[in-house]
Amino acid sequence: MVAIITGDIVRSRTGNPDIWLPELKTALSVYTDKFDIFRGDSFQAEISLNEVFEFVFYIKASLIAIQLDARIGIGIGQKDNQAKHLKHTFGSALVYSGEAFDELKKETVFFRSADAELDALCNTVLPLITEISSRWTSNIAATVKSALINEGINQVDLAKLLGKKHQSQISTELQKAGFSKMQRALSYCTRNLLKL
Image (cartoon, rainbow, N blue to C red; front, side, top):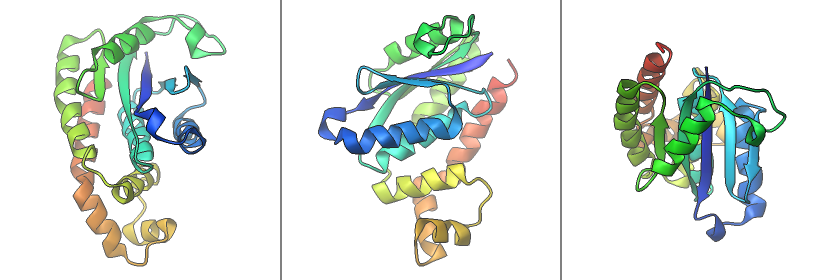
């Protein structure tokens, strides 16, 4: 089984594509080399099950840091063929990802799999995390992004990495971001997903 995400940039026309397109490409390539960007501001990526939820919020943090956001549908299932581009690939993971993306109304993340109970769990937890992330400032999002990708780094080293003078700035930003609660919620969803 694989995870496929399908997404687009919210209000992409208000941002400069010379800024957000490289940021999106970089964010996608941090976790996978299997991604496509199409129709200007839409994207699709294949990611391992154990990283999918962290990956989604890494993308969101990357974009919020430049004052944009993304809508993302997550699909879990099979991939029936190996093609150079995801857009030429078939399977239930891609169907579920497309369906999840089509379900996005006011939410910016939606989850779909063959397991209705898992769908209900994830579609209860993920909107809570997206509600918290919608309150992140650019600085907070940049800190969350760095904390996600540098898992296990202490706050002193994270402050140095981000060019902040004091570790207390990092602590305050992560606390305002609800970072530890977000990590627990994402881990909970991941543990349940890996039971499939």
